[in-house]
Image (cartoon, rainbow, N blue to C red; front, side, top):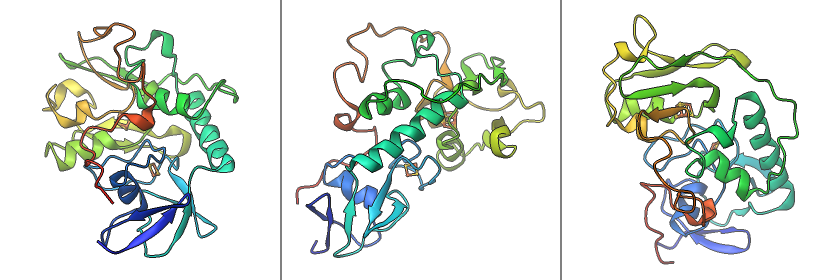
Length: 239
Ligand code: SF4
Ligand code: FES
């Protein structure tokens, strides 16, 4: 591997066709992200992974690495933008962490900690989106959904079921369930589906599994999200 680019002053090797995010992850460098997952095609919706590529802003999960490019990620300005984006995600949903069973294992919360988000800053929307508790084993809490479409991609591309989709426009965008009734109970979703496991927030939850891990032993209790590899992430390669 002889192709490299510079990320925050560090030389990062990459393979032809890799994105900046993929090459950075493989080099053990964390770039904040929420809608990216190494197993799925990039989605480019959360914009948290935005970096400066030769002075031009772009999503590192969708922009391909190129030899000699100079990329900045860990700047005060970019992290301030990421913090604002995360604050927007918090206020447009009902992310009430103290009462959410995903707390401590939630990527949205962990990214907020990583970015030193101390307040929601913006005015809360307090949406009243439908909660779907119809499925015997899975709960869908749309007010915690960040529309990352990871469940959509997992259900379609891995589970081969196409249970989820996104409907509506703008602020009315919602996670929809592809059944005639629109209810989870009327799909062939199984609790063991990848789509159930991959949700980064508390929007898709396995029933009867809440609050089983004591405080202090949850995924992000002692480790910043930058130190916790996402399941499925390739091992950092040695450069
Ligand atoms: S339910 Fe979860 S995985 Fe699906 S779009 Fe919402 S936040 Fe993403
Ligand atoms: S991780 Fe790149 S836009 Fe969401």
